[in-house]
Image (cartoon, rainbow, N blue to C red; front, top):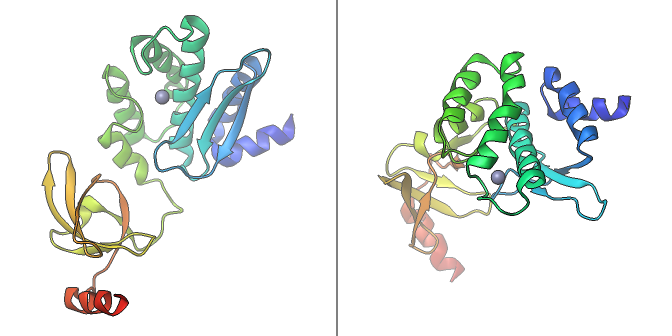
Length: 219
Ligand SMILES: [Zn+2]
């Protein structure tokens, strides 16, 4: 239906809408636009006993990440149809479908060149699933227009600088440890590990002493 396509074009790149629409109908999928979840970008639940399959995707992904996540979840559907539960969640069976379903989008120029390039590398890598590949994620992040202006990634902060989370906690960014940054929480003096791509708010005028004083006052 026309309305369905219009809704889809709010979330997907324009050149992908028709193909997405067709796949939703063909496989009887209920697509749910979800609130933002920090633990996952989307998920898939098999349709049992005549019920539709369900795919949910976080509402705040940019159109390219939205499409990649959709194809990721759709690949779970195909894998489930063919193998049931007898497969690894992101194993070779899933990967094959992921690549196969992504190819039409790579061929019709849906993605900007830099995403396309990184995506091809990503598809050749047998292990990588969407969300675990930092290079791809980094490029996709550049297309997040809705991003808060003062928001920045942990990796782009300078060492020992301070940043704030939406819940008000303040952290000091310390050194990189393996693939994550050690950060000291100024509220409880505990160490935490942050992904280099975690988006945070810079506190460029933060004075540690002032903050400790405040903490004391709060008891
Ligand atoms: Zn998955």
